[in-house]
Length: 288
Image (cartoon, rainbow, N blue to C red; front, side, top):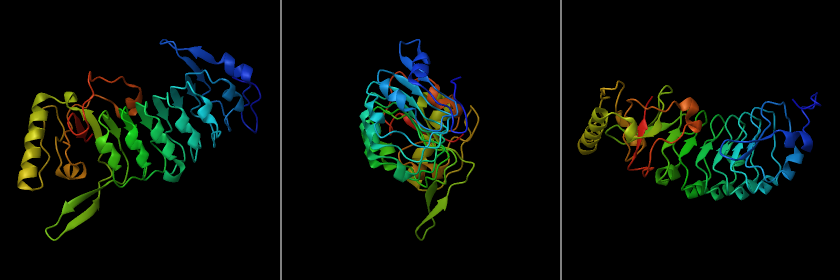
């Protein structure tokens, strides 16, 4: 533990930071300064631009330096559980980033810069547990994104660009005030989704054959008949489909079944699919 911890928080010197760098099994230079009571971003870290992974999670950092984009080789950045209210535009310079975790901060939609769309190598983006109700439309450029965490925010509808990200296979939108559209014979009514309902996206390979067949059949029936369907019980257990979720995510199915990925650790689990499928073709929305 670095010396100098007091009323103003822990002080980290360049010497201490260098000693904290470790090599990961895959040969990455990882600097971990997690849970150290840091109240500000240590400026000395900006001299360590050759670091590949930086973990500043579980601190009290309120602001990132405007020149954080100087970490040109950074591939993995974990800032979860701090007090960040905004992200500087220079983060768009971290074009080598594959994993970015901003979970459990104080971010609102105005605090997310459009330059996030420049991080085209991102595979995992965690924005859960903030105060977001919208995302920059520039995120449509994140073609390599596979995992997106939006849980515990203020979204009333899914961002439109999510539908076109072809490699996106996991989305966590738990505990958002999502709304859905339902016909009443006279028009369309907008109703708030029930709070206990969660939606996750998984590959069809996570479902048993019986559940998948029943889901497809029920989905086709709802589309052709235009009727509201009841949940269908799959052989793996759980309601396979609810019609209101189809109305929320056009072109998707909503089975429950055995979604094998625990959403509490979704961002650190390896992808199980050999070839990511398009969002509208190989992805299913799952109620857990």
